Amino acid sequence: MTNLTLSIDPKDFAKMALMANPSTSESIEDKAKDSLELYLSAYKLAEKYERFSNSTQETSEAFSNIRDIDINM
Image (cartoon, rainbow, N blue to C red; front, side, top):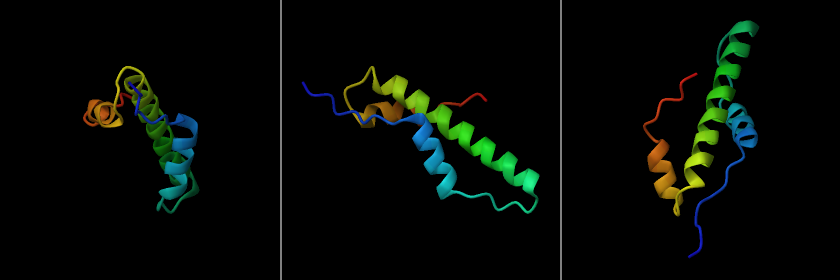
């Protein structure tokens, strides 16, 4: 049986999430904080997806496993 799970590189995913969702804060410090929070959240979520995807056969099953989890930052 072929594994139909997609592989997501956490670093690349976090960078793309950050580029697609720039901070709208006005101060430079707040922009940095927003960006760091988004980057770390996206990275951790992609890591959790990768862990689930390594133990499942389908991307949809891996995604459903992480849909409602808490990232715990």
